[in-house]
Length: 114
Length: 113
Image (cartoon, rainbow over all chains, first blue to last red; front, side, top):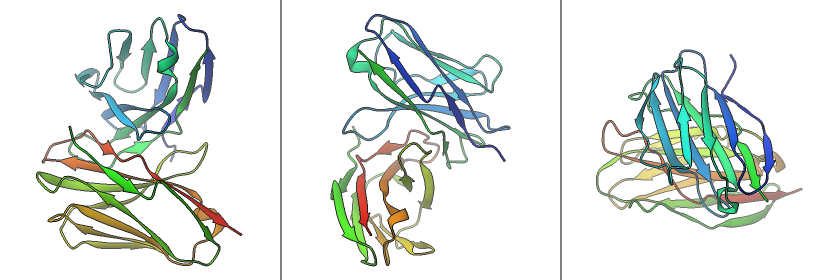
């Protein structure tokens, strides 16, 4: 079946602009996660959704970052007033539920802020 | 803050060589350790989920071991092939019910034909 998909695969934007990154999880997976991999680092947790609600957003770096999952499937990560330090690969993952720990990852969106 | 370390950061091996690399993680409050293979422009692919001390898992030419008491896991690749070239990530889960994977920085493997 289809895996996790993310769009766009690459996004180049200018400092100060607004961007949206989309994640389509595996059908039927109730848990969805966003991670961010900055250059030279491992992926770092941003936010976790169980169904439609953000159960844990403790990894979001500041209030410029926001994510939604209105219908419990597709999720959008939104970044306002982008900064050069936001440049990274943004990974989305889904799992059947929170207690099933195997997380399936999408290919990521590479965001470059000029 | 959980600290997950991987070594080496990168390595180059000749086709046919066997290789291994290390992931170290906190030995307290262990729940699971995940290994992923991440090829450029593709999704990170789950290799193993390891939960029990002394676990040894194998998938084709790749195997992994786990020592939760001392906080390390080894990944072995036997007879490396060019298609094994990728970044290998380990990720630690602490405590039952945890869902935040804490990743190491990865080991970038290049297999030279």
